[in-house]
Image 1 (cartoon, rainbow, N blue to C red):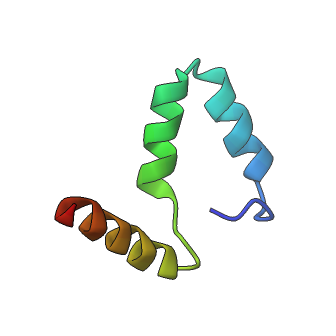
Image 2: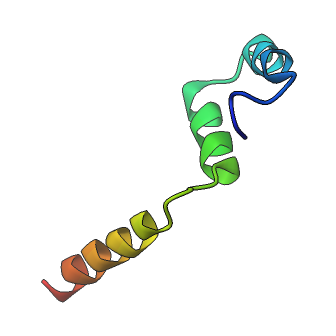
Image 3: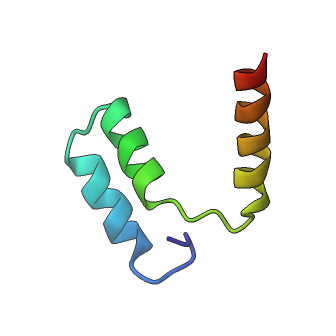
Length: 54
């Protein structure tokens, strides 16, 4: 989702009216978020591998 798309305000208003908990909102965000910089996934994988090796 890009925040400059049409009807974004309706989406935000609907999400806010649902009384989601912070955990629910985080879960939805994580499921729907598209990372425009996939290098972040590579860097996270490197950190995980370093932690597993330690």
